[in-house]
Image (tube, rainbow, N blue to C red):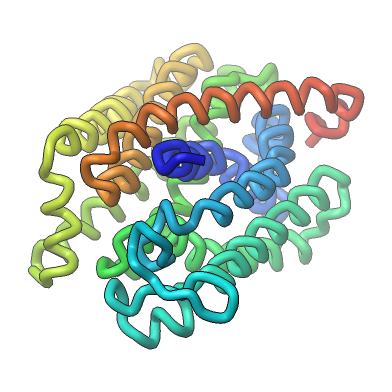
Length: 334
């Protein structure tokens, strides 16, 4: 893969994988708490969670393209060193102990594989009807631990000098929000005037969580005024990133928030479909804002490639679900 295709793949893969991971989280929560919202959304959440093995398979493309993606991964792009049969992290981009003990290709691949395989196994257990409340509770613990690690690997380590303790929690909320928005867009048959307000409440609460963590992360970085954190946000002042994040917050955040305050919208599956679509657009722009600035002038080619990759991934996902139609009853049943 060329660098642009590799970088586009990373962005498309991250965006595509959000809804399946979020669907798994919602299914695990519903297995513990119950509630009519889970029964109404199950026809969308279950097939979406079933795509997690496909997401895990897509991680191979990320691993194979590490030198083109991450400055710490070495190779011709970052000037790393060859050690132990693989590219070692470049100590010039991160602290030496981080370079040797954490940010190296082997451990990067291992952490991602453990997380994605664990999520895939949990999805299989849920779909097979073998997920007890105990398994669901333990599964949420596993998810909580892994989601605190892999977003740092996949996204933050593109700019390894920047750190954020809230980043994993923020990405977890992004994933749950993506799953809820997709459910709103798909508008399953069980979503009516009785259950639509439940989905609206979940969308509103999760949306507020995403906006809160994003805003507070910026405020903390601004108040601390540390060079690595300042550089991260200053890099995003270049055109077109202010417009990208502005559209993400406006189209995918403020407008849906205001719409969800209206009783008529909250009770209407059709209106929630529009809200879900706006949220998905906002999330796609948000992921682009997080990832693309790390590649500087090469971001344009990566963005174009990401759009093509994302369309392809969606097409493959729909085809896979169609081919699995004989198992459709199991996939859709709560």
